[in-house]
Length: 375
Image (tube, rainbow, N blue to C red; front, side, top):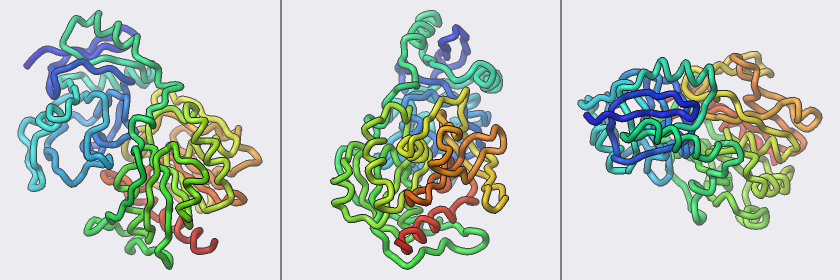
């Protein structure tokens, strides 16, 4: 195996070995927890521009299949992949190829043999920062990491949003989850929903379809008039990558739509809704990424176990008098949900659709259809 290095912008060097595509990759180095779901991680557009570290030590055990990509393109979205022990021998009846084969075919640089525990502790202490993966001189890799653009102020949505409108009709099928011991129950529909696709995950769209929605998905630069011309019953703001502050044109569009149709946002959609309501956002030290993130629903006092993937957060104090907080993260008290009843809008920071995570939050999709049925 060829010697490779992960070099951080602060000068830290992590030696390992090369697997995946033969190239050099730069991006923000982040970590995500969870012992399953690496294919979901690789293909989630929210990881665009990032070198993603898996904290679970064995990655690749179940191989790669053609059914589970989360990007609508079906391709991986990460800039690079960092693991401890990549498995060369997958064992799963759905496996079609190895992780290494998949990464090479799609041009994704990866490094194995990394002390991911040490790296994760370093990122927690020092914060997420730019890095570079390559087989060259470590000092040159550090220089590349330092010259990479900062995630703050970076518009990555333009890289992942669709070029033109499309329809999405796939539902959850045989994987339809139960919600609190019962099947997902749509309100009387179908409902016409227009999705602003900032880098939507397929499973979010499947959940909306299974909840009784007919989806028309538009690019991020769609105007207010173009969105309303689809005659929607509701508007959905998708997840996606990068800094919400770098999307003032999208914020202005959402601001013009407030109150006209019921609106639901997830992740980046949550942050953009907050900014449209007059709030602000800021960057977290190392973000929330992975499974088993505890969130408190304030109205019921119920704790939900969630999957999350975000590096920016809504500043709750900036929204006083404009929206109420509906959910908070129990680890740090940060914003996990908003409710703006006068504007007929609500949002959550976490991922209720999580394909590799818990299903505690599926009722949010029912809540959206109920709002539309009352319009």
